[in-house]
Amino acid sequence: MPIPKTIQKTSAEIGKEIIAMLRAGEEVNIPGVGRLKRVDKPARPGRNPMTNEAITIAAKTVVKFSQSSKLVDALNS
Image 1 (cartoon, rainbow, N blue to C red):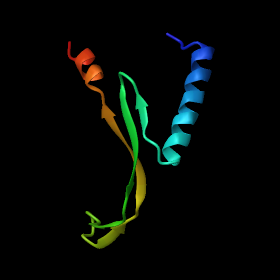
Image 2 (image 1 turned 60 degrees about the vertical axis):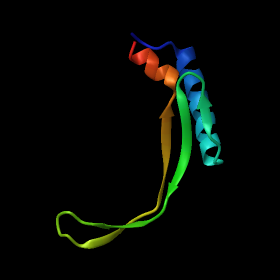
Image 3 (image 1 turned 30 degrees about the vertical axis):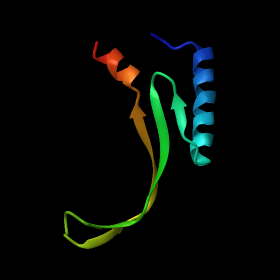
C-alpha cells in the first residue's frame, strides 16, 4: 500500500527535526514509542580478524534507542 505524499512530507520534516535535536545533544522522547539519545563513543583498540594486526577503531557518534514499555506491551499482547 503506497504512503500518501502528505504523510511522506510530514515524516521527512519530523526526521529533520529529530536529527537537528540529536546533533544539538538533546534527547528525543516519542511518547508511546521510545527515546532516542546521542552517544559519543571514543576511539578504542581492536584487531583485524584476517591478519590479527592491532588497529585503532575510530571514534564515532551513534544513536541509542530505548523502547517504551507501552510499545513492548502492544507488540506482546
